[in-house]
Image (cartoon, rainbow, N blue to C red; front, side, top):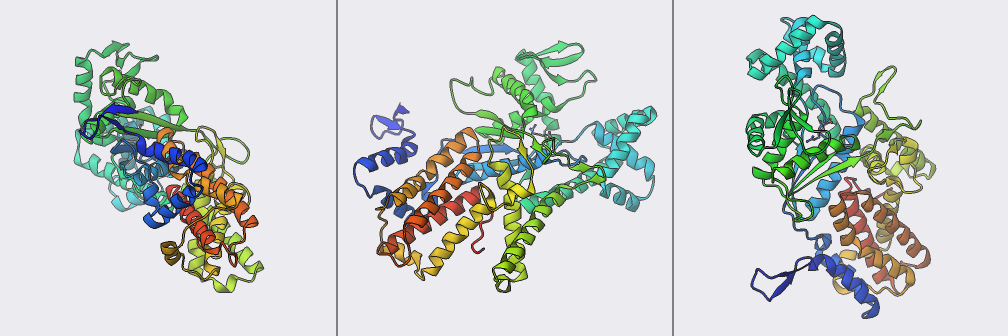
Length: 524
Ligand code: ARG
């Protein structure tokens, strides 16, 4: 993209020169200096992997992800959103973009009236007992829901309770707060295991903004009456922003949150990660925002920009939609994650026992390693497919050490670490005096793949498809194997150059693990 320079340096400036650079350099390389690829890799070793970070025009991004609903169970769809959202956040952060990680938790609605009323009726004065009862929030929710569906009188009282809550009555607010806290504690168990950071700014945060936002939209002539409800008539079906009973809804909250993110948080790009089932909702309120002039017409300018990152369902090994609830009760998401860890621990112990290594491992090392492998396997299984497709949740598949799995890649990485270690050379010192020469075709093929790093990251920043990183990583370990099979490293005349190539491969692998939220293991 060429533009008249605003900076006063020369007549024209090329804004994406930085991103074009590696590509130009790569093709120039093959014609001219045969060692330019080796030189580029060597530069990275000297200046760090950060020197390969892509440079992007946006400065601040809001990433709205995870976002379970308070007082309801967090389901596998929310885990998917958490995993995909965290990876996107990490990619942007690596590109030096400020990321506001937002947990848009649901909940200021009828379900609260139902829960609070149920709580008051079942435990008229026992706070202790009440806290215990809602400790099992899912069970408590089920019972309250049953009462709500079956008993019209209760339903009426529950609706009344919503009004008291929205009016801010103390007793109701206090009950609401303790229910939220219990929910939050449960969500945090999952975030802790996945090592994901999020800041909660839930639906209720935006409710004070709804009236003025709707006023603005009304004054712009966008809101009309339709069968007693107020709607924005842009796409079909029209977007309901005020329900017939006068209440606000998901869409009015999302419009207000978007307004806030654009005008108060000054974000240039707002990204929402949910299942594809919500695509229609996002597209209709994005189009309302365009009609209001909040977002540019897609074709004209790139920013500010809003994107929906949709993903498919998680399926069980039977090919049906994965349920966290089995016939004998609820399976908690944390238990699901912990199962991956304990299966990977069993696998590790078995392997180390078979190869006689088990005595060299402390319990703590076993624990940390199986955690990195187990949770990493769950994340990788989710991220490696195009996010729009459904994927099967299978421990057997994700924990296999063959094929495109995190376990396979962890082994590949650990092997490179051990090659370097066994050489007894200090690569940090070597890199200061030695260079990289890619003489063998398998060295060149590995080297050319390494320098595509920035391009892949940049592409993922643009189309928001994390599986690109997995594809890259899998091909990288393939090229490395090829290289290692055909090129002797330790003891060869090319030893130093090849050790540096090993080191660069390990660094790139670790950076990708980091972007995927996976903890690399150095010894296996
Ligand atoms: N709480 C919603 C759900 O569980 C997801 C919220 C997504 N974010 C948003 N701004 N609408 O489906």
